[in-house]
Structure formats: structure tokens, C-alpha cells
Image (cartoon, rainbow, N blue to C red):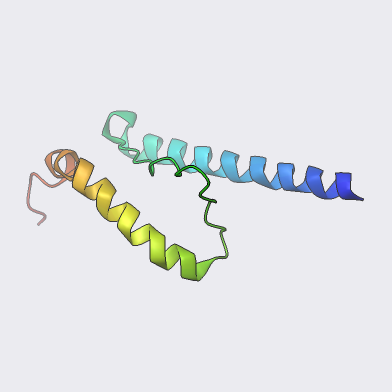
Length: 88
């Protein structure tokens, strides 16, 4: 019984990874791989647990700060690549 639960967890994890790769691939096809900017969150601190997908409270607490750091670090690249011409 315990083995089956472990196998299901590995299957779900693999499916989530494949879905993420598929979404990235689709964006590359639509926009061109040279226009794709993939921002990754920094690695977790030692002892810090990942945010569970259903942990709304912790996600609301942690994710906005992570997003702000990513934009602070890479915002100029995004601006130069995508926001150089005003939209009509």
C-alpha cells in the first residue's frame, strides 16, 4: 500500500514537470525561442520547505517578494526586449 502511494507521488511529480516543459515549449513556438526569457526563483534556503501547491497563505506571503526580486534583477532585460516600442 505504501509503495503504491509513493509511485503515485512520483507519477504526479513527473506529470507536473512534463506539463511545465510543454508550456515552455509552446511559448517558444509562439514567440520564438530567441524571445523567451525564463525566470527561475532562487533556490530554497537550507531547511526551507517548498510551498505546497494548495498552501494559499504561505504562497501569498512568500511569492510576491520572490517575484519582486526577479523583476528587480531582470526587469531591465525584459524592458529592453519587450517594452521598447509603445503599443498602438
